[in-house]
Structures are given as C-alpha cells and as structure tokens.
Image 1 (cartoon, rainbow, N blue to C red):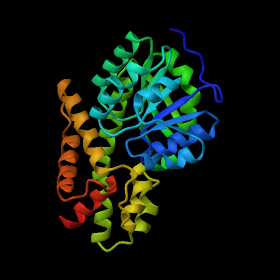
Image 2 (image 1 turned 45 degrees about the vertical axis):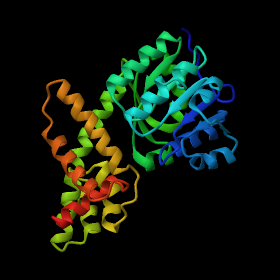
Image 3 (image 1 turned 90 degrees about the vertical axis):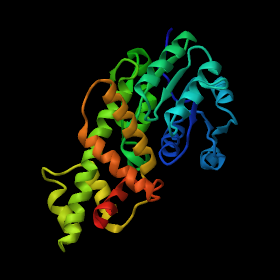
Image 4 (image 1 turned 45 degrees about the horizontal axis):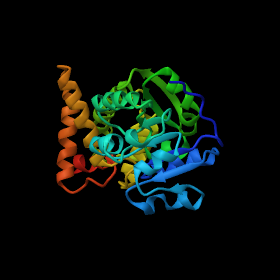
Length: 297
C-alpha cells in the first residue's frame, strides 16, 4: 500500500468525537485548510465546526466513505471497538488506502487488533493518544504518542502538526497506547503528590499561591502542579480531563501491567482514591478534584 503526504486542501479529514478536547483538535485541522467532516453522538457538540463549514454525517460509516483520513477521539475502548470494527464502522466502510487514526486513550491490545483488521482491508491504521489536556488541545500543543508504520506516520505528520508540538513515533501498532500508559502512570502518582502538597499548604495556614511560586519551578515542578495547582487553589474543578476517563485509563494501565507481571503500587493507590471520589459523585469533575479528598481526610 502506498501512502502519500496528506496536505491541506486536497485531503478530506473526518473527525469523530468533538468533546472537550476533540472540538479544539478538529478546529485546528479545519483552520489549517483541510475539508472537515464530523460525526459525534451528540450533534450539538459539533455545531460550531459545522457553522464554520464542516460537513455533518449521521453515522461513522457514512463519514468514512467520504474521507481520506479519519481521526477518532472518543471515550472508552468499547466505543473505539464499535466505531472501528462494528458493522457500520470505519474498517468496513473506509475507502482503500485511507488512514485511520485513533487518538483516544485505549487498550494497546485493541490497537493491534484494529491495525490488523485495517491492513486486511487495504487501510492504514495508527494509534496516537495524546497528553496535554484541554489547554494543550486548545493551544495546539499536545504531546502525541504514535504506534504504527513509519510510512503511515510520515504521510499524516502534517495533520499531527496541526494539533501538537511533541510528536513521536514510538514503534509498532499498540506502542502509542503503551506510551500513554507510561504517561498516565506518571500522572497518577504525581497527582497525589500535587494534591497532598497543596492541601498541606492550606491546612498549615500558608498562602498556597505563594507556595506555588516557590515550588512550581524547582525540583517538585510538574505540568500538573503548574497548570492544575492554580485551579485547585481557586476551587475550579471543571474538567480539562474527566475523573471518569482517568479511572478508565488507570484501569487499562493496571490490566496491561498485570498481563506483563509487573507491580504498580503507586498506580493502584491512585486508582483506589479516584474510585472513592467517583463514588462520591465526582465523575464529571476534572482530575484536580482529588485535592478535595485531602482536605476532607
């Protein structure tokens, strides 16, 4: 299969899933001059893109039949499986030679299955999960971790450049998802530390904003501390990344680690804490809401 570079103006791009992050990601592609086609289960979430000229489709299959590249950014592995491998899915309906890119955080094993199914139909497939949250999506500065062939990767690199600034081909199919698991494992324990530190600052009577000035750029510095720390202090727990989706990601990481015979105690503890706040009705909040757990403990 040959796969030529996907340039603006001449490449029809389909985008499935225009939620908190997907809407911004699709918008960058549209602004770069790619004809954009969209599908999402809640049509209202794509309204702004349609008003800017995107073409709406009412099923994934209909979208796939019209596009040269299809990008998905949905919620859970079960959604990915249905969209790619279902009867009205992408693999069954995409044009030969098309490229399918799943940017959802999903299962590495599912990514490998999708790659094999796509290959059998004369399609290219990449798993390309992202990190950077709503801020990275909005600013076009996502970190994009890619699994698949170098040929397919290079052909769609201009599209990745619309959405991110740190774009790395990690290896064969599934490697992007495995890399995202590394990312989520690091974040899981890191979020506990950030929340615990800022809760300590508040409980001890310190000015938490002043504390951030001292620690955010030192050895304790992290993306979570710099970007989510201020939200915690202000009591802003609206989602850049939902608690329910982080629990999903940690579940995938725990399952993958177990399959490899690996111990991940930090990840297991973080997952248990997030499960607890989920049971308290905080699934729809941003991951920084873990801060409230430490204040109530």
